[in-house]
Amino acid sequence: TDDAAVVAAGTCQVEAWVQSPHDGREYWAQPACNFTGNLELAIGAARAVADDGERSATVQLQAKSVLFASADKAWSFGVVGGAARDTGAPHGRSAFQTYFGKALASWYPRDDVEMDFDLGAANGYGTGVFALASAAIQYAVVSNVQLMAEAFRDEPGRAKYQVGVRWTVVPDRLDAYVSYGNRFGNASSQWTIVGIRLQSPRLLP
Image (cartoon, rainbow, N blue to C red; front, side):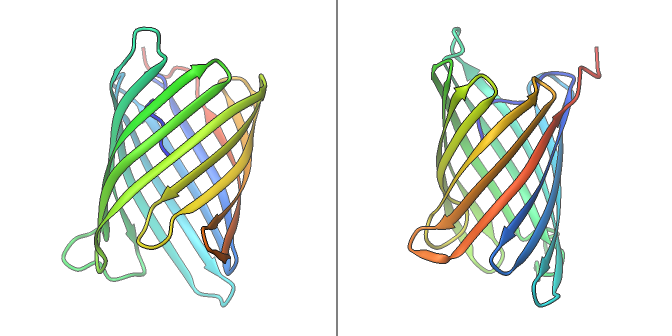
């Protein structure tokens, strides 16, 4: 679930994680930067290694912007769009198999609670157009530990859910997190994720 926020102006972040589904491993890295003040540009790359030895790679491009927010910063709205390509899968005449766009909304009812909502659509090669939707909540148990839960639909078929915890190791610099996910009604689709997020100091004036 994307939040309706971008990384701080003039800074970059790098998020990296390992996802372990029931049949292999996926290794992800996604740097993102905000050069203009309200446009976050990200490029992600993944390497998937199945238990049977099959390997594949994925590349994803994404742009996100905040459209407007309340004066007290209690809520904000934004948009995100991008494209993804699995280098080992057919893609027709286009360089990418999947194109997507979503409207984003974030609500901060209290200092220790954040709620995020996404709604959009994607067009995938071979699958056509399908809906994207998600809702997430984050609750700060203490100042540097957050509990997270979300339900989402990011591909055709049943929706999925994920629960986890995030630890702020160094404020505004380093986070670490771990989560467990599964598909509703299908216990064999479970996965775990372990990741970190590094935030840079201001790089541009």
